[in-house]
Image (cartoon, rainbow, N blue to C red):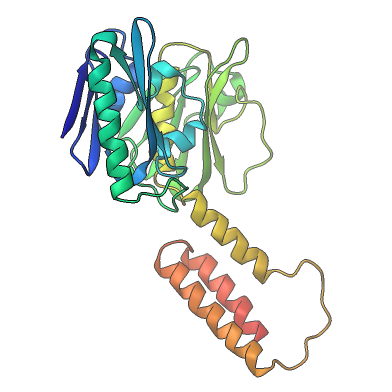
Amino acid sequence: MAEIIQKDGTWVFDGDALRLTPGRDKNVSLLRRELGELLVPLAALAGISFEQGKKSGRLRLRLRDGADPLLHAAGGRLTEPHDPYQLLVESARYGVAEYFVDEVRNALLLDQVPSGPVDAYLLPGPSVPLSVSAGDGIAHFDGEQVRLEWKWQAEDAKSAAGPRTLPLADIVAVEWQPSVGLENGHLRFTVRAAPGKVPPKYDPNAVELWGFKRDPLMALVAAAVQARLLHPAARAALEEARAADEPSAPAPAPAPAAEDDHDALLRRLRELGELHRSGVLTDEEFTLAKQAVLKRM
């Protein structure tokens, strides 16, 4: 087992997973404290590094693409104070940090963990229920629906419409964007059958963020929702399947199907059944796709 204890936090590696615990120092970000302890399986890691500085160094974990819903929802926009996969190391503990890196790297080599993307989340995301107040609204998420309530600073277009409830089944995407310079940030939910995007200031499905201390906490709401949405890899597979079933241009009436065409359609039905059983396709999507294949038979 390898362990490093710092004011910024404690990292422990037992050979199978890393346990990341944020420190209690006043300089530890609010997001990391609210996120709490993380258990990162070795299979979720793409690498680890240690960077030395004159007064302090920094341990960094690199996760495989698609392993963590927080990183996906934040889109690489978590700055260093809020990134739970970085740890400040005092110069007196450089030797411990280097030993820690060696232990993790050796385990990655021994277990032959690939560094490429994954097709399912390997971390569960923040626990629910969650409630965060920041910017012009308050976002609540209980695992099944998002509720947005508006503060007095919100635009009339939002306030007049009242609180907004978004069932998880209606949400197709979520995005957290921090404020940068003079540009405000936002937490935005994309829902089915919604009109085109409007500025977050007026969007009833978005909370506008103004660059204050609690803004990063909205990334936790985004991550909790993202963890319960279809994984990006599964979504890409579904879109590919839909594209294959939908001809790009009208085709002439087909000739009677040959025997090999019939076998291909049967294989397609089996593939659709597997996607449905694994949860990639909803009942409605499976029914539509199956009907399309049966018509071709």
